Length: 96
Image (tube, rainbow, N blue to C red; front, side):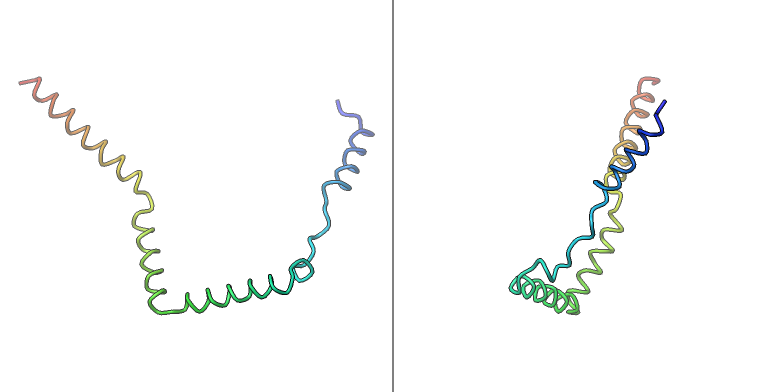
């Protein structure tokens, strides 16, 4: 049985030690050069992603991933079917 006084002390301890203050904003952490680098990289990524050829490639990748989503299960099922067919053929051969 847990003592109520002990439970209150534990809750108070947890509230002090496991409730960190919110993190500082990045504008206070990063130097100007780091901020420039991040902004430029995001802008360059945006320019690349809006290119029609890149959009077409990304669409193809999404479709390909959707088609091959469960490829491991498909391969396992394929081989399971093959082994069943082989076992059935051997069983029929032994009957004859």
